[in-house]
Length: 137
Image (cartoon, rainbow, N blue to C red; front, side):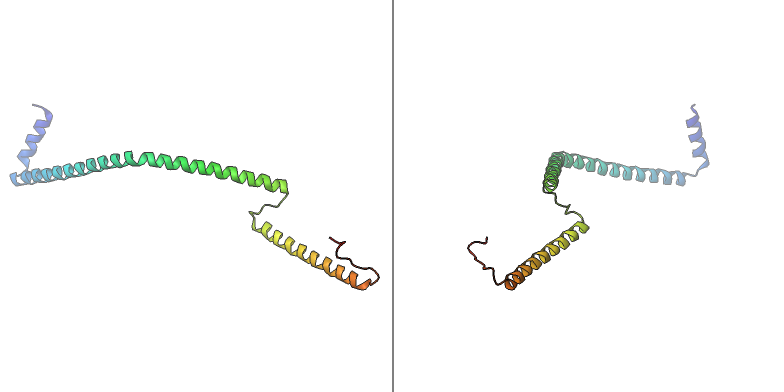
């Protein structure tokens, strides 16, 4: 007789019949529960495989599109940087640079205003020179 059969026979002799019946009932209940869980997982796996097969090409297409968009945007920003460099403009990405540009615009406006005021003062203070609007352009 095998050792496992010997052990099982000794175990059956030591346990009362109602306890053995209870153990067998619990084992049967666990077996049914595990079979239900296994069938649920199998159904989920089949459902997931179908959905994955349906969605995978779409995800690949969207990923390809996003990579193309990124490449296009990189190209556009490279062109913008090249144009800015050719025009010798400051980088407009930084807040500090934006403030500097605003200050430069204000300074330029003040210079234009001061120049026009000076020209007005010069034209009033020198009455001997005649101003011909047709000749000044």
